[in-house]
Structure formats: C-alpha cells, structure tokens
Image (tube, rainbow, N blue to C red; front, side, top):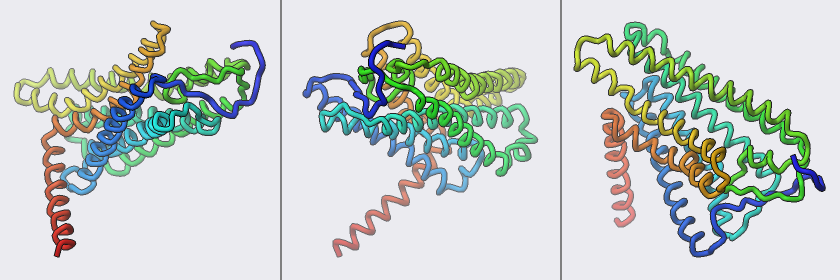
Length: 321
C-alpha cells in the first residue's frame, strides 16, 4: 500500500510489451495469428463433437466445454491487446478493467474445474469400467459442467466485487498487456487485506482443491493400470489418458511458471512472456494435443471437413452457374 493522493480510478494504462512501432507491428501479426488459430482450432473441436454421434460421450462433452472456455479465456485479453497495439493506445477504462478481471478469472477457474471433471471421468473409466455408464450418466455430467460454471462465476464475482471498495493512487500504470488482478492490487492506496484474503481463499477452493483432485485421480489410475497383467491393456489404458494428461501438464506448468517468474524476478518482460504462455499459447495448443493424439477426434474432424468442403464447392459452383 502506497501513500499519496487517492482517487476513484477512471482508467488504467496497460504498458504492454514495447513502445517501438516496428516491434508493435510484429507483435500485432504474431498475436493475431495465434488468436485466430486458437479460435479456429477450438471451434473445430466443438463442431466435430456436436456433429459426430460417436463423440457423444462424457469425455468429449467435457472437452467441448473446455474448448469453449479456452475461446472465451483468450478472447478476454487478446482482442483488447490487439486494439491497443493497432491504435497505439494503452488506455483501458476502470469498468473495462474490472470486466476483464472478472471474465479472466471465470474462464481460468472454469478450465481448472473442467480438467478436474475430465480426470474424474478417466478415473471412473479405468478404475470402475463396469459402472462407468451408470456413474457418468448424462444428468451427472450436466451437473458437473453446470457446477463448474456456477463455482467459477461466484468465485470471480467475489474477487471482482471486493475491488470496488479500493481507492487508487495517482500512478495507474499496469506493467502488463491485460488487467491482472495482482498488478491492479499493487496500485491501490487503500488497505488490500480483505482482497488478499479473498484471493487466497478463492485460489485454495477453485485451484488447489481441484488440482489435488486431479493428482488423487491419477494416483488411483496409475495404481490400477500397474495391476493389469497385459502389456497391451496397460498401453490402451495409458493412451486414453495421454491427451488429458498433456493438457494438465501444460495448463498447470505454464500457470506455475507465471507466478514463479513474477516472484523470482523483478523483470516485467519475463513475467509478460510467462503470461503469454499461460493465456495465449496453452489454449492454442490444446486442440492440437487432442486432435493429434486422439484417433476418434481425428476421424471426427476428417468427417466434418469432408462435409464442409463439398458444401462450399456446391455453393461456389451454384454462384458460378
């Protein structure tokens, strides 16, 4: 908490990556390309799952929700960053900053909870295969997804609404490309003890408990797989978890990298790079992980594209005719 003139913030300044116009042009092209790949890849995953009856299973139901969450998670920060680069502006309004914080936390928590639900799905499928269809029925899966959305929204509301009680100093510069909650709290002149306690409590409830649930699920999964006598059975069991496990390592690895980099160094540049990995690169890579490592998903995408291409050819042919 700093001393100085206190004010009710009307806008913040997002300092971003660089003030050099030539570098900004390169960054704009890079991040626009990554954003388009992220949206297109995750949208294809959703369309493939919805259009293919073979993928109407609990695992792919959660995957479609995860892809939607990834699209929204990236869309919370990247379009505003691209707009600021294009217009050479660093301004974000107070209301816009609060909205960005709210949605960033919602979809970040949602990713976390959906990955936990997917880990539980794999646990039931491998450790209790005979009861899988009974346990992971449509109603239960729907409740898990709905509960994940509701918990994420409530947790984010709690963290965001407590910001309304804060007053800010005259320095309104955020050394980031989006309104990151810890960086905003550093600008407050009023006491942030309540905010800090809320952040810790929400992190424990919506991040640490689900993460421990994932660890426990995979501990049980590995124990069950090791008890199998057939090498082929072990390989098939591990292969069903490969894509999910890769996404879990990527999600938590980059998330941990963000906070370790911010704690270990005072360099805002290193913290920015770690944040890019977490907020942009991870959602972009998820569709590739699930499509390249999953035979069913590759087949569904192939069938989806085979229906789209003839349709577009027919439309273009009709126009020419």
